[in-house]
Length: 405
Image (cartoon, rainbow, N blue to C red; front, side, top):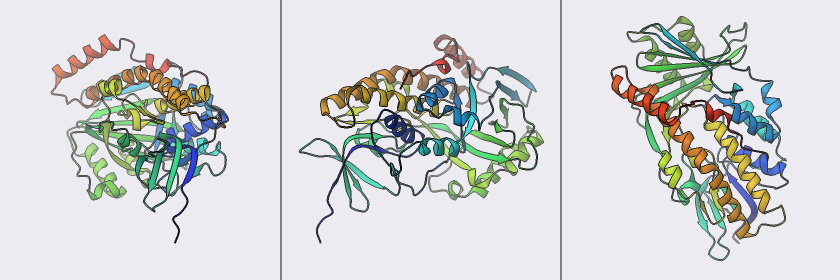
């Protein structure tokens, strides 16, 4: 039997997550075709929902989908922290400008609907990335034995990126906390929660709640110091995840409000996920080489950060706009000169680097502050002082404008 002929495509995007779909849509709007290679059989929406701040909405408007998503999500009017042990409360703005919580599946479907039919290929399980010795173009080898040679390869395949591995980027660090995320529907009546992001602190956990619309709420539980083996059954079992989450907020010295306990008990089981939080340190974002030949990365593959600023998704949307703009300045759908591609990718990395260094540093410090135990008062004071010195305006990051597509 003759070997299958190797397929050659111009631009391959690995991963049909938020960043991969947004990058493909941005390129499409610039008149440049791409192919998105997704390992699963459908679009994956793990994580339930995503907070999008002013800078993320700027990027979505450039992609031409902001108006569609605004109709599905309520504007959030601020953030409220409640310390249940002391009954202390604090309110603050959540963003300078616009903030909404969007159901992840709504975001991904909206991005995907804007792409030409056939752009996304499902079931593409990549074994490895190699370099063609003749052309120096990247070659993707799949588990089924097939191969694709791409003139441009963009890794948007998340924290465990095969493309990042090929670029020899350092492995992501493990943050000392786990997060449970889920959705709760109130089909028969409105939930009645105020249109704000609320965080409840108690029992050494943080429970956050954000309404998406009048009948749907996104929530999460941040659990510092939790230890779950990678092969644990709880990672795959929503019932165990829910039971553990309820236990964390009910078995302790602090009493969580009944509305919080009921919200978790009545959650949509299919939306539940338990994940170990990972991050790429700011100094690695500053020093790593994110481009080799005509290969680069974007989104979590480039700068995975904890959810503490709510900027992971918005930063990925920024990546998509900037990368597509840089590529469109140097190439078109009929001209893929290697030198021009490399120049475009270098422009992209240069433009994104310092923005991502600051976001990564602020997210990490904020995460340490949120996950510090009540006994570590000196540590908390030190973190607050560092934050005040480095990030004297803690919301300035939400005003960033990635620029026109």
